Length: 111
Length: 111
DNA sequence: GTCGAACTTCGATACCTGTCGTACTATCCG
DNA sequence: CGGATAGTACGACAGGTATCGAAGTTCGAC
Image (cartoon, rainbow over all chains, first blue to last red; front, top):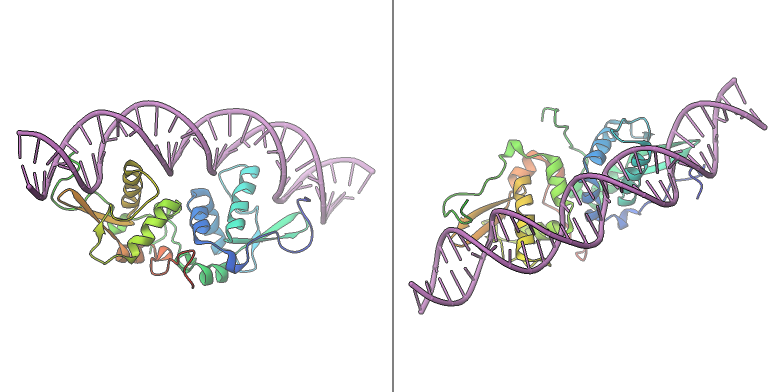
């Protein structure tokens, strides 16, 4: 299991395999919700997964990103030593519209 | 603290107080999601909170219902010895549209 | 080749929380 | 009144999981 395989995306569920239970459980954690919110503001092509600040260590970050990826919330692809993460907006809207990412206000954001 | 106070609703957040973090965390538990899904099929006036079957004991049910209520997902009002529960559809759609209850397919339901 | 940066993996730990059983309260009905 | 029903409160426990640190891997740059 090489951590950076150079090619293609890391394992993730296909659109039809996305389970709303998994998505909700993934989003239920404050750290993961924080991450996804930041990612939602990033360009659609995605950003390096490490650039979003999180109040946890690197290994914990890896843990949370794997959960988000396994749930089908995000995609990650390798680019050199980096992982580019992006939100699976279309897949989420198609498979679990109840979890639509189009409106996730921050606590401080005005509605 | 009388368990059945005869009057009014049990404490719950106002619409403006509903936090998407809380809602997502509440829905992240399989037992609670099961409950909410069943409740979503019930008449809009609500149903006695005990009639929805759950694979847990009464006290655990109380625990889960309190979490759903505190998160703003459901309302409960006393009627005799019963609690009538109903989904806060409008409040959820207004405060956390990302958690819109209008489409929560069951695993076995066809999309 | 060597170094550093970016992540992952693994093991250990500590906390959270879902679970249950028991006891208790309130209401309804006979 | 007494019993049955519906639900809550509380304490205890176990499993899950979020967390960290240390070690390892890959890649890019010098």
